[in-house]
Amino acid sequence: MFAVLRDLIRYNIEFAVGLVLVGIIVLYACLSFFSPVDPTQIYLSIPDQPPSAQYWFGTNSRGQDMFWNLSFAFRNTLIFGLIVAAISRVISITVGLLSGYLGGWVDRVLMFINDIFVAVPSFPVLVLFYFVLRSGLNTYSLAAVMAVLGWAYDARLIRSVTLSLKHREFTLHARYSGMSTPKILLQEHLPYVMPIIFATAMANMIWSIGMEVTLAVLGFTNINIPTVGTTLYWANNHSAMVVGTWWWLVIPVVLIVITFIGLFLLAVSLNEYIDPRSRLRRMGA
Amino acid sequence: MSEDLLTVQGLQAYYQMNYFGVRREVRAVEDITMSVRRNEVYGIAGESSSGKTSFIKVLAAAIRPPLRIIEGSVRYNFDGLSVDVAQAGKAQIEAIRWRHLSYIMQGSMSVLNPVRRIGRIFEDYASRPLELTGEALRERVVAHLGRLKLGPEVLSAYPHELSGGMRQRVTIGLATVCHPQFIIADEPTTALDVVVQKEVLGLIREIQQEMGSSVVFVTHDMSVHANIADRVGIIYAGRLVEEGPTRQMFFAPKHPYTAHLVASLPRIGDTMQRPALEGRPPNLAEPPSGCRFNPRCPLAVDKCRQEAPPLETVAPDHRTACWRWRDVAPLVQPAVKLWERA
Image (cartoon, rainbow over all chains, first blue to last red; front, side):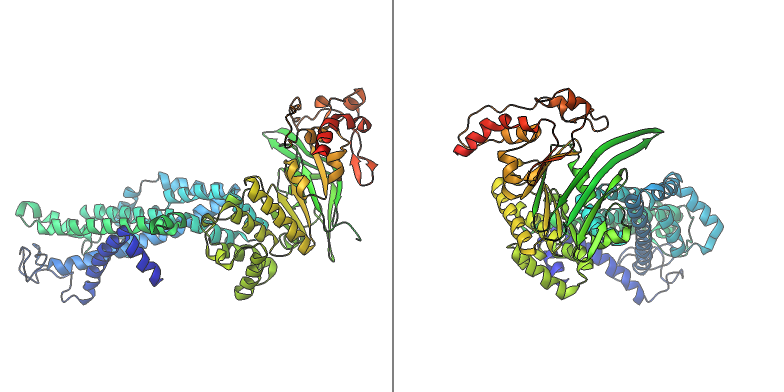
């Protein structure tokens, strides 16, 4: 495992850069565990201070130290994105593999449900959830709802790959030798669709974080929990750009862009590693 | 030897389809009776769409709808285990597959999963039938690979890291690691160049003799049959038209179709023009009446168009399904003469 990591860093510049970028953001988010201030409290420091030695990221108009506030925000946003990606990956892998490999009525039932989720517009549904749950809509419940809404496209993608794998010789071979269906799916087909899973997980995280920001900016989430979205909501609410407190908007945006680029590079380079054919090309063998 | 390892009796296997109320039937295997002895290589030849793939699907107990066995029996007599594929249940078939009855598939490129190491592929396929895991399985596999002249380092390689010949040897290794008594080889040499082909053929022969198993070898390449088979059976339009010891099949065929196959073989130093056989293989959904070869047969008479000839024994071990088998010899004369001179 360690050797794999070392080789990846040595031979794969994308991986190294991605690792550094994501590492910085994750470390920064982890700092929130040692925060001296409570992110939900306001007017603890002097409002509207530009970035300085004392307040690295400045303070906002609500008298919060942006350094610690954003640290909480990124922790929540990253956890949120990971939960959505993880849950929706589990659903889409299960549905995609089963429906592609088993076919028949299983396929038809699963794809019927799948098409419903493709057709349902997720944004109004999320707004509806906000109005029903109100303050009950925290990071975790919102993540669960988004995961249930966000698996359908990728399940179709995985299904299409499994459909083609089903008729390859190695699947016939495996079945002939008496491998059970779960074993064929997990050992023969899952490694094959792994690159798709990584790529779509990445896209799914970006989608879910973007969706969360949209909801938060419009005030449709619990705005007292600091996330990247609620940070932008409060900045907007206090007319940060008009007032001249630009750091309130610019710093979270720069950090989220770094996060996305880092995750993207990691996903791309891991894909290349997972596929044994491209791994060798990179190592120069 | 006591009883034949495989006995096929009057086998009929059709593809039966039902599309929107329209029934279609393709008679892929029509009344085949044959047997495979212990410790022999039985070659099956036939052109594309002659039903040979359907036939070996039945032999391999890999029958899936729309292919169905309509009649007849396919009985295996493994040591202390007798199974009729036409009647056996799912559990029984799964118990013999790979353990006693294995299958070298066509196209070594796609038989191995490109994203799994060879060692893992062996684990996937062989661990259940061998009832071995971990180190014991590894030892067994390494010993077996040694027989195929492959080192243990192959186990940690991915399929794309091996050459075509090595990959084909790995496929053969996968099929034979359980020491099956019956091996079906479906065109295992098709995608290989002749040098590797020769090596692979020698390997199959060697392994077969070492383990004392029987091999059914399917290919349309007659020269491969000449090299490896003890007996050859020719399938034409779903029927077994001739069967006999390899030498006799080449020097004294008793069916005009076989005669044409043999006559079309190229030989070194020979500039003779090869006559092509007129027409195409018949559509198995509507086969011609009588002998199925009659539309293309140079010897066809009225009887051939009305009545299907039965397989009759014309020499020891040699059976043919032709009304005019006595008149076949002149068809191959020029070719055989050349051959004898060579």
